[in-house]
Structures are given as structure tokens and as C-alpha cells.
Length: 260
Image (tube, one colour):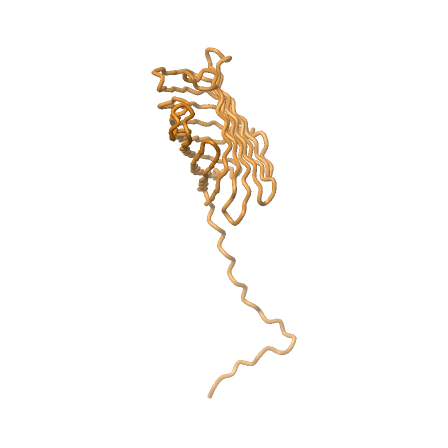
């Protein structure tokens, strides 16, 4: 004989099983950014320039204060280009190197205290054949301050010391200490457009009228998920460059970016 469980009377509340909550997503500490680009100019002399940049960021909040972080930023960039055309003197076609640069840097910083302060250490190495730099390396510590930390706008200021060495192809070497004054901005204009800017100023400790500087800015426009179009500007300045090298080096770049 089959037992039948009587159903609830009409109007009687029936308990409904609540599905278990979804597990919270695991925190993401790593962020990668890859940019690849090429510029072509066709005129009396054709020019092709190729470049790539890879940036890897690790950011981990403190357990006792999730609003403060330990960060490490690795940045690697490479440029290569040639100019081809007719030599007006010889009347022959020639190919001339117009860009050959590589630079890698690593910056580590720690938030501390209650006044938005952080300490950092920065190291970099690279070369630039066009500016006659066979080898450049630098290292130096410093202190920074989070000037603004809004939802869509972040601005930092930094001050420190920097030791720089350049071995040049004109058979000269520079080995000097510099002050480092820097600031950087990240502005999320809207859901698709982001503006980043960074400026570093290096006056010599022994003679502040002699200096080097680096300015960089980029507009990134998201076109689909984690893919973006980027337009950037890079300006390098040195009051004492190698022989027959101009003080200023200005570049405008366009690239395709992928974040992951």
C-alpha cells in the first residue's frame, strides 16, 4: 500500500529552499597591459617605426588596512625603425636606422601612515642607439604622497634621489646623482576613455641648472572588452646629451592595447 503525503491546505505558506550564495570572486592582484604599434610615413623618404610595451602591475592591500597597498610595477618598452629613400648626394637608395631603443624599469612602493604617504625604490636599464647611449642605468629611493584618490581620478607626487650612469658611443661616460621630482595622473574620463600622464624631472645634485626630464601621456579608448586604441606622446630632454645629439626628443605614437 502506497503512503501519500497530504498536500498543504490552500493558502498555507510553503517554505522555499534558498539557493546558496555565490562565492565571492577571488581578488585580482595582477594586471597586465600590452601595447603594440607601428607608424608609417610615405614621402621622398619612407619611414617605418615599430614599437611595443609591456606593463605588469602587482597590487596587494594590507590585511589590517585594505585602503593601503604594496605595489610593484614592471615596465618594458622597445622601439625600432628605419628610413628609406634616395640619397641626394650619391643618388642611390639607402636605408638608415631611425629608432633603436630599449628600456626596462621596476618600481616598488609601500603605503604607510595615515597621511597618504608611501616610500618607493626605482630601478631602470636600457639603451638608445640614436641618442648614442650604449647603456643607461639608474636606481634611487624616495618618498611620495597620494595627492588625490577619487573614484575616477588619481594623482601622486614623488621626491627622491637618483643615481644615473650613461655609457655613450662617443667614448664618454656620465655618472652623476640627481634629485627626482615626479608626478603622475590617471583619469577615467568615462567608461571608454582613460587619460594617463607622468612627468619626471632630474636636476643634478651638484648643479641644478643641468637636468634631464621625461614626459609621457596617453589617451586610451576602449573599443571592445579589454582591447583599446591608444594615442601617446613621449618627450625626452637632456641639457648635456652626447655630441651632435639634440637636447630634445619628441615622439607621437599610436598603438593597439590589450589588458588582462
